[in-house]
Length: 427
Image (tube, rainbow, N blue to C red; front, top):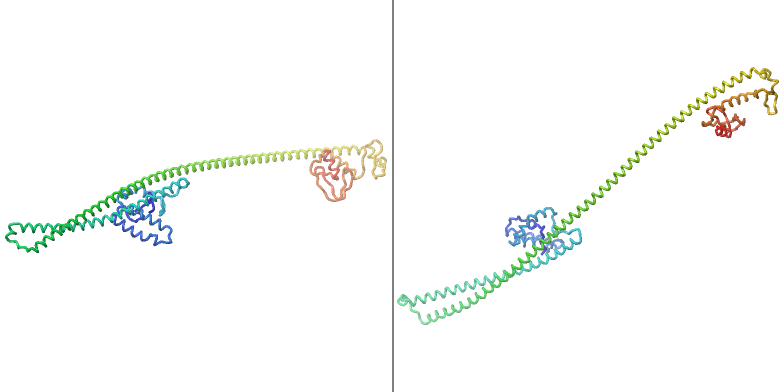
């Protein structure tokens, strides 16, 4: 028989109410036993367990003492049963650790042993009850036969007393010798039969008493087994409660650990976000400073360019003024009045002034060179020189370039690459 667990709702298993009587419990058990018997469900591996659970429910609720103990605990059983899913498997459920599983297995084995002993004792009690019932029936039969013989004996004694009275002496019919002997034989037979029946009744009464002693002894053993089962169930309930509390504490510890990890993770994310904000703020500040520095540099370069332009314009204006003064002064010299006497032709095609006057070139190129020299003397040549394609004559070394030359954007001087580098380096 399967063990009856504390969380099993036997009333629900049998489909009866808590106030159901023995007849209703017996009828429900017979109906369910026919449905769930293993012989009728050979393909159902749970049929045996279900049938054993039905037997456990029936044996508990049908016995008044066991039912009284069960009803005392039924409120908590019903509450637990309502919180757990409906299942026909035995309790207690397997725990989440090896120690609890071993305890549950040991509990099931002990319960199975107790239930097997209870089943055997109850079957023996039923057998003795059947024998006791049969012995009482035979005892009643012997008592009835003895009573009948006693009635016959009393009737014979009454008839004999009537015959021996004065009334019988005068009015009773005279018996023949044969009738008197037959009557005497019946009385002797009755006495012998009563002796046999009395011995038989005594023997059968002793059997009934012996059977009752056996039944009482079995009842005591059954009560002891039930007490052992109750004590074992209580220990199991206490163990389950301890396991439940331990599991709650373990879950709480795990929850605290998860909360601590979550807080650490949140703190780490907060620090990373804060560091990212600081980094972005620093980058923004650096970009702002770089932008401000670029703006200041641009303004300074613009200011320097403006000042250089003003200085260049002032130098150019000064140059042209000085050139104009020199020209006017030169026009009033004797050499300017007689240019043919002061010039002499050289082998390179250039003319030089003789005497103490200043050296001047009278060609168009010479005038351009003098103008360029005046312009370049005030230009710093620091700007980017523009490249001009085609053939040009360098105004510094007079070399003619065939492919390209460079022009200063400040003074518009044309020079070759070498002279450009020299002029920029010199500047």
